[in-house]
Length: 111
Image (tube, rainbow, N blue to C red; front, side, top):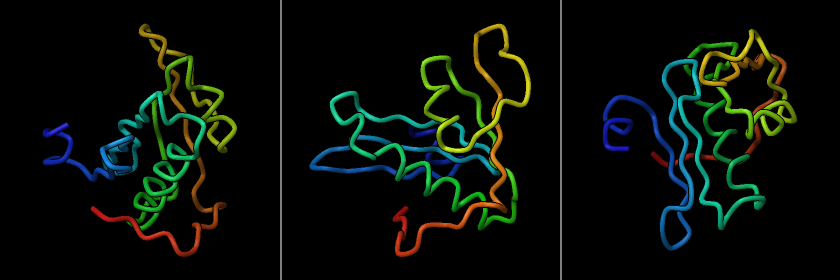
């Protein structure tokens, strides 16, 4: 986590303690994590929106990421498309056209 914060943009969701985080490396969502005790509460969706907004604001029109099999449906429901076969570790390359997405109004990330 310390390396990610030094080298990339990172946002952390806090509710008394850190409950999730997202890491962005240029046009790539490098990591997205939500504590299992906080899953299905929208934390991941908010963090993903911050990541996509950061990528768009940096001048990119497409967001990229690699998804594990267990998170694949999550990203597909949020507009990501497969852009190749899974690699030898089972990670699926995905992309999302950000030009067709309107950013959420009133959401200001704190870094």
